[in-house]
Image (cartoon, rainbow, N blue to C red; front, top):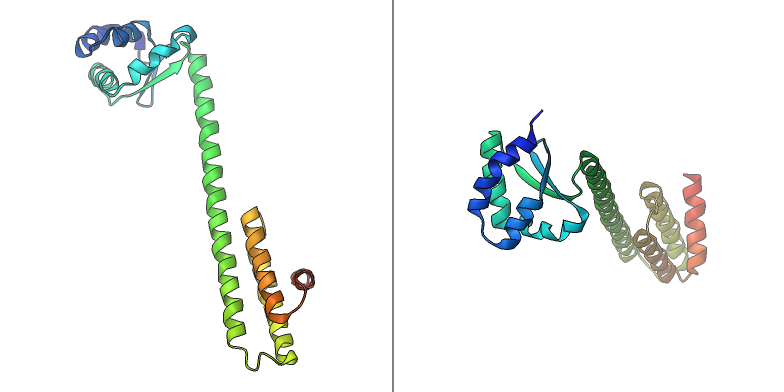
Length: 202
């Protein structure tokens, strides 16, 4: 296991020569090496010195630390600054990272699902419009009744293929029901009832 304390002691004088500014020097002297893990060199600061972290995150400071420590470690290095100076603090930070990553993945998955649902219901909406436009003698009630049965089937099939999982999909679905309602001059609640009945049959 890499002796990060020794590496830091050897690298620090060289790093100090490569940077300028009292704030940066103070931050470097206060920083404690914690671990070198999977290419990440972790430096920690005590909670009462956490305001110094900004000096170490400056592009030139970061680059200098990474370049010098990489030479001493004979490995590529990414610098990570954390609050706390122990391995336990680093483990806690990694847990936070993992939680953030999961939340981000969930947000991306939710966004993709919303986009997919939106596109799906947009397609249904357009299909209903095309079917009605192609309907001969639309003024005749028997033809509109046939369209109604066909439209209910289309929306019921879509409901089975694209379950309603969010507010956007709910609104897009309602929009399709309203479209049938307008075309057939039937209350939208009745349309919704018939779609639900048909979807349960499926």
